[in-house]
Length: 597
Image 1 (spheres, rainbow, N blue to C red):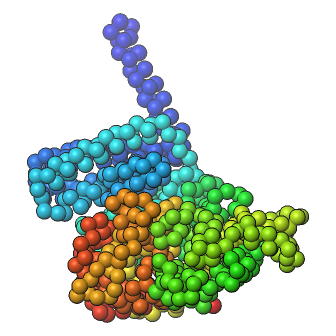
Image 2 (image 1 turned 30 degrees about the vertical axis):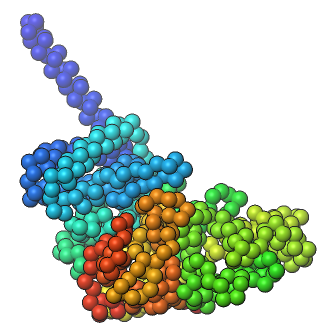
């Protein structure tokens, strides 16, 4: 054989062997590896769109193209959201985090927001030389963050269990955040962006079940495509008839493939299919360590202590003095009263129902755990003026408490101490979350529980009124799904009186009194709306006597909408333009959140 022919022959043979090797490797790759490869390819397309479309439009100051390319690139992000949020949570905050400063109290560090939500705020305001320079800087920062994420992803080894958990949590994220306008308050692109997020889920399912004829996800996308209008979208139907079935399908596929659950970062049980199912939450994930885990004996002990005046100085005041069970553990007063007769305390008494399912306590979030809250209240001079150490000494002379402590802590001595008292009280409060409202029953399949106005009220709450973008379903407090790892506070600009002619800001400084950051001035925890009909009056100062007044405040745009100059207000100052009927429907829905006997 001539030398040239030999060379060509061997070159062809080597090429064939190489291609065969590559093909075999591709054939032998796991589904998780295929998903990772698909992510890499889509990430590259995402980066390419940032560079060739969004960056180019910003440099050319082409306003129409800026908006179009912005929406296109964020749609690409949404398709990858399930993966980025799960495997790169810190980077996801830089790509699409809330447009507010993040303050690290322990490190005295203020992190400026960046990413799509910041871009949106800039793009949808009147263009200026300054804000377009800021927008350019944001785009460049996003490019760097994506490059870094791409490098890190090369080193990752992901598992089937993680991917199924990521999909599960993405469905919950869509339910609570995606369809509410939480991360697109100006563009109001929640509906088409939800379709993009579901296409990302469909990409994964197609790899694990390539021959599937199931239409669960495609039907949901089709439903979204038919109802693109933000204000008119039927979110209640979408959750119950489309999102929940997708979640069930993902779970059935995982079980069919014999893929185990993974220890999730969410406070939901690792195998929870719906956030609205019975016992969806793992209460123990809201406590610090295994010594604090809840059990029935601790709850019984905590209830006894909660109702006992032994914790107060003088034994004349118990927790029930301010927290009445018939009022969802509030007191019906604008502000709580102290030990001195008629002496008002600083703030309104909050409900204790569902209090255990949050990450911060008191209106100013000064306590990080329920145990810390109990310690503070017992020792606070105006509230109970007591001592846990002294209370323990008194309790240890009681035969009844001896038995209760012995059972609760499996301690033969039956002795009480300050920590056990704190923890028992916290355990009882953590048990006050029955999820037994008409709304809960509806979400579990009993469609007779809500009437037409209540359904409309839910859709307004989660959409046009934007209530759900701060009071996150299913807890309807400021603890954000799907991880439930942080409880939010907001600056609303709450007035001192109901005077709308010459309104003045309430002088309570909120979190600012503890930490003197300008961002914290007048900042208060976002409380739960569960059992809201039982817990009037409302706001931290009890200024509003009924929900109609509360809704009028929000409808006007909070403090700024009333005419109060609140420089750091986090609530949108834009009017909601809700009609009287729409307000009534929202209030009707809120009534469905009251727990039933």
